[in-house]
Length: 348
Image (cartoon, rainbow, N blue to C red):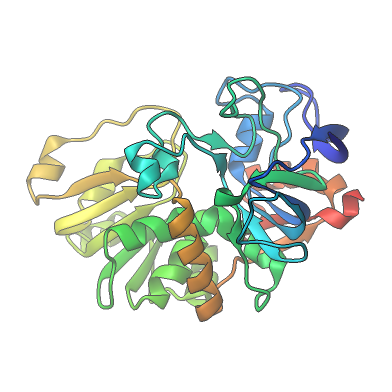
């Protein structure tokens, strides 16, 4: 075992604070990584504060990881010491179900292992995430990262990037499609960048006029205020796709009405309460209401390669680890454009 420095939550009420954890020695199929940067996802806050229930303490969040390989196991063939790599939202799966065989490990039929606060495949230990100096991960779940891009800005691609790239690719968004992005936050700003890079005509739907300038800078063609009933009325049957990134309770029916016939509304946000959906909003235009969860290892590598080729990264604010509790509070207030990323050398 190797003792490494970390930041952990010891309870739902306590702030994150310095801690030490033990990482396993690399096995034959393992890659040991020195973490350089780790993005801060809203899921980190939910977990640290036990808002989704089931948090096991001490909890070490962090699943947007970029770092350098320090050691590899004897059976590892894709990586060597010194390589720049990434780790996303999960670090293991059963490896043999139909979804794992199709590199859709995020939908593992036997339960994948998330990067933190998740039961390992040995069914004994709980994972501890990227708010730490090192991590050890099975080779299959380690991704190649291009050194062409600023690595701090790459880190959020491992969650926010793949969460938006995966549905855009799966539902075959293409040049000329009219796509709306609901919510311009960590997920939304990546959806705008990726969809516009693929030639879609992107409209940002927001309640805040203050985000219009940023929406256009990120690649949106249009910006519409959803709190204006006349604007919403004018947008009826306008879009082929809507990517909904909002995790607060809201009326899906209001936005389903903005889809054309055969349009698809893709849920990426996870509101706390079940939603009422009118059947007539779906059957009246053969519309679809669907959801999507990150991407598998193969698709995540494809996304990283695509972003390197098209010079796409996340807009970030770089912080030191001792600013993490302040960053959580600012995230809850929406005071971040558009992702906090921790410079992990501040922990060493």
